[in-house]
Length: 143
Image (tube, rainbow, N blue to C red; front, side, top):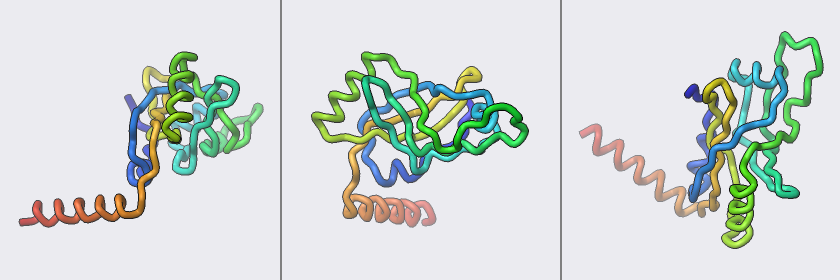
C-alpha cells in the first residue's frame, strides 16, 4: 500500500467515528496525476445523492503529458461503495447529524482507494485541550 496524501486537518477538526474504504471512478490521466502526487484532499468532503456517494472539491492536477480529453481538476468524482454501505452511512448521517470527509488517498494493488470517515465536528475547547496534551507529552519526553 502506497500512501499518496493524508488530510491532516481532518483529525484535528473532527472526531472520527467510523472509517470506510472506497474506490474512485477516475479517468486515465487522473490516475497518472495521482501516481505523481499531484492531488489534494484537504478541502474535500463526501455527499450522498440518489443512493450514490460522490467526493467534492478533491483537486487532481492535469497530467502534463496528456493529449486526449482532460477533465476539470476539481470535478465531482463518484465513490465506489456497496449499496448496503451507502444505506448504512446515510442512516447514520441523518440520525446522528454526522459529516463525511476523506482521511487519506492511497494505492492498493494499483487501484486508487480513498479512506473516508464519518465524523463529528470538534468544539474549540476540545481542540485547545488536544494542543495542551501534545505540549505536555513533548515536555515529558524531553526530561
